[in-house]
Image 1: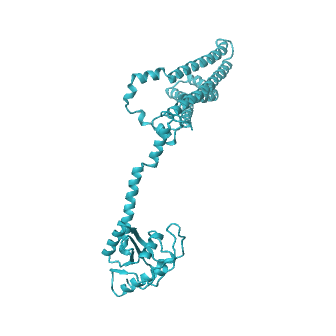
Image 2 (image 1 turned 45 degrees about the vertical axis):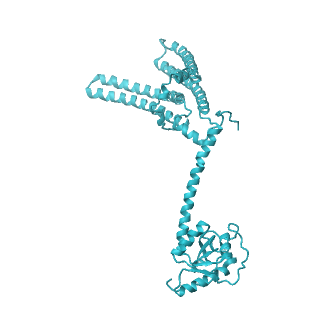
Length: 390
């Protein structure tokens, strides 16, 4: 990739830049391509259509001669209708073929598009300096050279064709032979002019593509800015992330009301657990440290969730679990003692309150930190000691 010196536009446009340029009407396109292809189509159709029209003209002449024997308005209308039908079919074939070729050539050069910016009033277009640059710029010189070349080529080819046709005019050759020769000469003229024009149209398209490509090139700074916009402003992303975290934190604190027990450190760490025999081992419904732990404690007090002070167990659970995860296998026994104590109090109608851990020993097995702990098959560490209907 080339160096970007002083914001110089040396880099290829990105897909987004190409899309914006398309909306602004900056698409390489030459109207010459459809015109010359249409001329070739006319040249190819002209021979068969001329043969058909000559046969039709002969038939109509015979009909006119027969009609002169007994002329009536009805017969005149019939002959006029037949002539109009032949002319309409011929024009329809020629016109439709030119139209279809024009549409296909436009689609091949970038498709059909609508550029509303081109029709909006723009005072910059009235700038005399910019107008002078357009009139005497490289594009204007190319248009002038293209016109001169096109006119010269067409004139030379037409002159050669007319020279070959002139001996046939005013001679003593049969009219059918003269029409046939003229038809061949005109067809060859149109084909030759069409091929020459098609070559010039391809060259013009290449020039337009090169010009538009240079106009929509980008600098490294523009590419970086576009990438930054596509990725999103870091400040906006940070604000969105903060709102998402706040919403998740509020949902987590609200779930504390459904917990069976809250293990604390006693004030720095808080982990709320819920035990559902149908889902296996107890799961963490909320966890936090510092200010978040204080909010969890407040919510637990409001919902009358029993609070158990167990420093090593609370720290181990906080370090090894995330919200929604099952507790590690290594802590099943320790948590089972706490849950058995809490559930036994619940069966006696006692709710809430602060308690110390019923465990006699504070030693716990080593547990891997969260994110490094392998998923273990769940198994309920304690039997369900809830009364029916609880």
